[in-house]
Image (cartoon, rainbow, N blue to C red; front, side, top):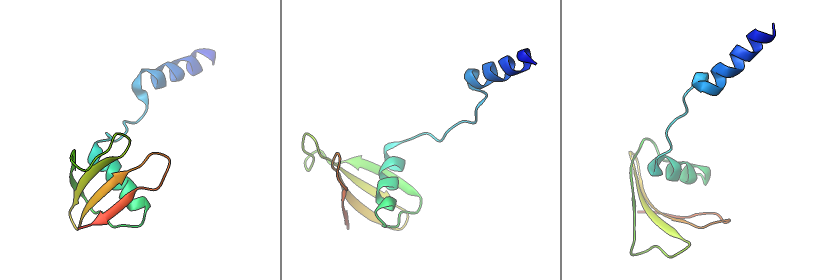
Length: 84
């Protein structure tokens, strides 16, 4: 019995767990947008807007299938989201 539990634990540690979705910037930023109630079906791209960004506030342009947003990510605060 002990060997069975050891084998199961070894399998889980070796990668027997289900694969997780890869977190790309477009998926992470789309999740931020959705959490604040904005629709974003099938995010297509997310590009950083270097000109609008500040040292602790990154600005991204998110293009979804049904909308486009300018998203300012602010640590420890709600993000600023502008549809355009």
